[in-house]
Length: 123
Image (cartoon, rainbow, N blue to C red):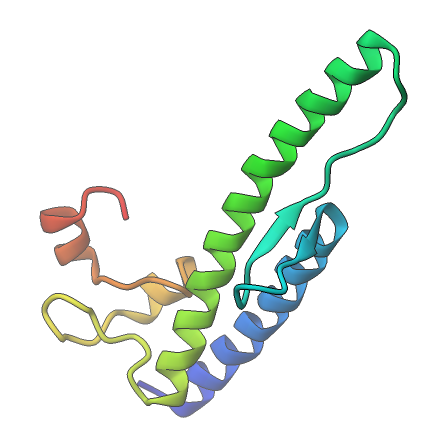
């Protein structure tokens, strides 16, 4: 894989990591117990029944968003570790190099198109 391409993806991934962490910090507190784990904040709107219902609905939305962002962060961190080990862009199933097109479309890809279609559905 070309060094310039990988350097570009590394920069993109670092920027994405920063964006994800910023989004997480806007809806959650960083866990003191688990690395890269966040705990959604429960909103406080008031004591009226409709306010309580809004609090619960917004908290549920925040939990879902928190989970999605944590998963995205884990994928970005894994891709950055692969770059550090010179393993970026190598399919985890067949061991072949993935195409630049695949990595442009999905910089955190774990599998080449053939293995994804064959073994992992729409991963």
